[in-house]
Image 1 (cartoon, rainbow, N blue to C red):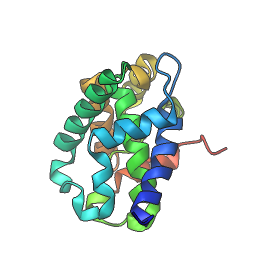
Image 2 (cartoon, rainbow, N blue to C red):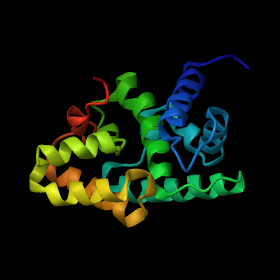
Image 3 (spheres, rainbow, N blue to C red):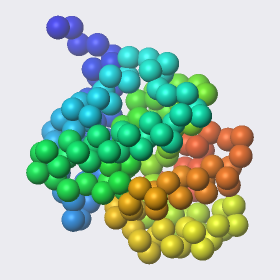
Length: 178
């Protein structure tokens, strides 16, 4: 088997996702993250951005991906929430597609951004979209404890706050790089 750019992207993206999504109360190794992503079928997406769902189907696909990741994690003795599953998926796809040069593709523009406390704090501080209360409520819950509905509310409010923009652009408010 030859070492392809798709395999390279998959390995690096799985590493980044595994490091970012492993948190207190839900610790797992990078190797476990990679296995979960592979077993949940997400690694098949990396061959081409056309493998991603159409923008209008992203939320339904993401919900199914989260369910698959949670089930796969459970089969590996881990207890993932929708928040942890989403973070694993979103970092994985961000590294592979958004940062992989496909950021202008309509399917990539619709991908969910990673959600964490740093982003939610800044969204609240700047009252992005006039949703200060939503961002604060999400911060109190803590992204790693989100259920499906709580996670989807945050994504929906980001979408409403940034009409006609790629969802990854919300990361202009992420201060974790500082």
